[in-house]
Figure (tube, rainbow, N blue to C red):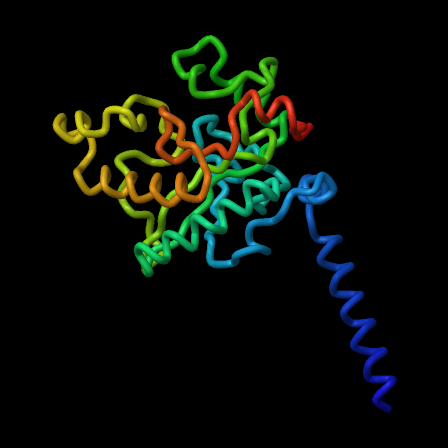
Length: 225
């Protein structure tokens, strides 16, 4: 009887695993084949709200039509998990929220086509130049949620293309009344946990962090098709 029970449990486990694999999108399966890791599988306390799986982004379109999970290269994943631990250490009620992670190069092309020849082009990496760190699974767009699950003030929404999102003149932005002093402190907290975990901030986007430089990514890593 016990042996039959073990067989039934084993068959159930196999069926559940196969069903979960079938339910994953082609893009998700591609990410896993390339060795990228699902953030939710590594730490379910990190919130996932992919902005390109919705239409309220700078393109006005849903770009991730079949991707609802956030994947990262293991090297970046290790640092993100550390950043979450640091955030909980410094502010126990807070947690990270990811708005974008690994991004296929063909999606990057759509983004570039949207801003090409406009004032917004400096904010999007050109695929012809190797794309950006998102295309290698080595960048993450991230913010912070409070105890209620609400985004804490950062001065702009994620994906805002303009000087108010820059991090190099935040004191001036506060003096001009363009962001609040609290928003500045919140950005500094985000940068603290991310940089201590090994990420590098991007000057023009308070939410964007790279795990390696562009030359390193091009030399040692491969972009996602």
